[in-house]
Image 1 (cartoon, rainbow, N blue to C red):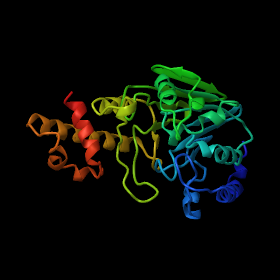
Image 2: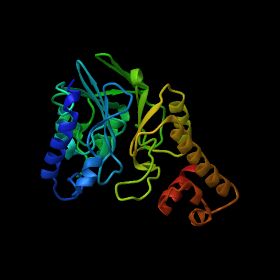
Image 3: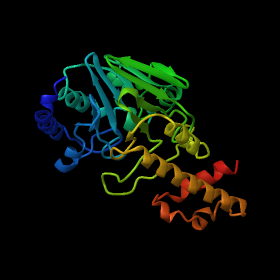
Length: 305
C-alpha cells in the first residue's frame, strides 16, 4: 500500500483526467472544470483503514460514488461509473496502491454505476445481483452493453473475502430497481447503498430526489421496507449512490421522508383523488424532492394496481 503517494497522485491524476476530457453524449465524457474534477478525485474515507472514495454526485456529470477497499492481496471496488471511466479508475487507484483490482461489485445495473464493467472483465471478478445481469442483457443500447453483464451473480446475499477484508452484498427487495444491493464492508462498518439512498445536490446544484426505475422492476411500495433492512445492519459510515459521505442517521431521515411521501399519496388515493389531479393535490414541498409530475403519476399507478 502506498499511502505516501496519495498527495502526489492526486495532482498527477487530475492532470491526466483534464487532458482526456471530451464531448458529452450517452456514455461519453462531459467537459468539467478543474474545480469539478478536483471534487471527483480519489480520497481516503476518514477513520476507515484501507478505504477510499472516488466521489460521484449525479448520473450526468460525475456518475455514482465508487467505494474502494485496498488490502495486501488486492483491491475491491463497489461500482465503476461510466464506460469511459475505466482508465481514470485505474490511474486513480494506482496513485494509492500497487495492488491489482481483483473484484468489482455492482450496486445495480445503471450505466452511471456499472458502465465500466466490460473493461474489468479480463482482470477482475465482476459480481452483481442476478437481476443486474438480466437488466444489462435486456437494456442494450448506446448506454449499455451485454459484455458488461456480471458473470457471477447471487440471489439474496453473497460475500467476498480478500486479505483482511470481508465484504457482504445484500439484496433486500425492490426499490430503485429490482436488482439493488447494499454492500457492507464488514470490518470497516461502512456501507455502499447504491441509489437506494442518495443525498444532497448534483454537480449543477439541483437537488437529488429518489428515482423509481419502473422499467427495470423498481417499486415505491417496498422501498421503505428495503431501507429498514439496511438500517438493521451494523455500520456507521455511508457511501450513498450519489452525494457526500454520511452517517446512518441520514438514511433514517431519507427513509422517513420516503414513507411520508408514500403515505400522502395513499391518503389522496383513498380520498378519491384522480391520476390527473394527484400532482396538483400532493404537497411534498417540505421534503425538498423535486419530483416531476410523470414520476408522481407512476407511483400513483403502482399504488392503485
